Length: 81
Image (cartoon, helix red, strand yellow):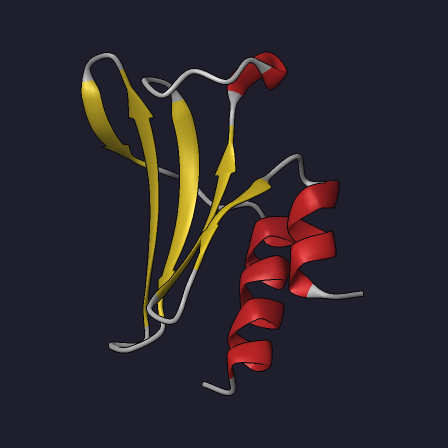
């Protein structure tokens, strides 16, 4: 199973993928709302990962589940980090 498939199984969508970034987003109740979502962001150039939750109040830290961590690890493996 690919990282993308693992994220999709966790209800994340591939939001952006280009030469510099990959980001997956998860929206509450499958309602797409650019003010409320969780994001797992990979920067390919600097090799860092950001995990955040955005809402109308701003940005907050996000706790990560084991399944999310497994998908993150798979993405890192696929990027060759």
